[in-house]
Amino acid sequence: MDFLKNSWDFFQNEVLCMSWLNRLTSALLNACGLDTTSTIGKSVQFFIYDTVKILILLCVLIFIISYIQSFFPPERSRKILGRFHGIWANIIAALLGTVTPFCSCSSIPLFIGFTSAGLPLGVTFSFLISSPMVDLGSLVLLTGIFGWKVALIYVALGLIVAVAGGSLIEKLHLENQIEEYIRNSSSLSVSSDNLLFKDRIKYAVEQVGFTVKKVVPYILIGVAIGAVIHNWIPQDFIIAMLGENNPFGVILASVAGIPMYADIFGTIPIAEALLSKGALLGVVLSFMMGVTTLSLPSMIMLRKAVKPKLLGIFIAICTVGIIVVGYVFNIIQPFII
Image 1 (tube, helix red, strand yellow):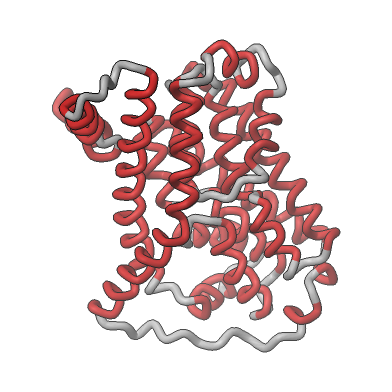
Image 2: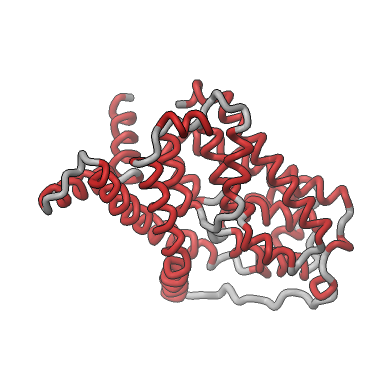
């Protein structure tokens, strides 16, 4: 039993958290004459370590997920979803959302395609909610940062929000809130999935390059914000704003994340910094969910596909779900960390 625990601790600390990289960064900066115990030194070390760590994880995870995605072109996903009805269709759609790209903007074209293909509106919204909120990348990253208990509960609650949100939208019968050009469009074109192994590898490598180019600026911004929070903002201020003494911390964090545009990788350094400064776990995770699910750019994109009433209902459902998840984590934090 001790062997398994030690093996898992090693995997979590040295592989997922890359503690070896932090030690190496510190040694190199000290060798260059920068004192890593000073505020500036800590900020530089945080920035370099987190940037390199996130980019490594980003490349590895996107490669793996893109390879998996090569087996699930939109037409195949539509056929899979078409076999299920009722709540089961929402559950399958939410699960399929976990193998899609990380940012919310990437999921909207697939959402439009599924809707054009005639899938039930609630099913497509379950997919749209789960895709940015819960994915394989978030599971691995959250395990490395917060531990497996937090990661599994986060994924479970995210899937519940996706299934419940899609089911509610289905019951409201809002099909007339989809823009006409989507409702009147033809079915999805069939995407061939008869690819050779080398074709799938090539596709995965291309997706790594494309995604890295797209998200690197947001990663750098996120890490820079994290470095400032981690080393320059007083801990008392963070605790006062986002700690247990502020009952509105979850709501503030959820709303604060909306103007940002980032995927799970861009939010991790900010989340780490907030948590280290005393912010409650639920507050941190609410912020992450707000950024990844309700970012302003993705809402602008979604407005091109749905009318204001449906967009407002979608935002309201996600916001309430995120806030509930945040308060649940605040309550159970003493038992899981």
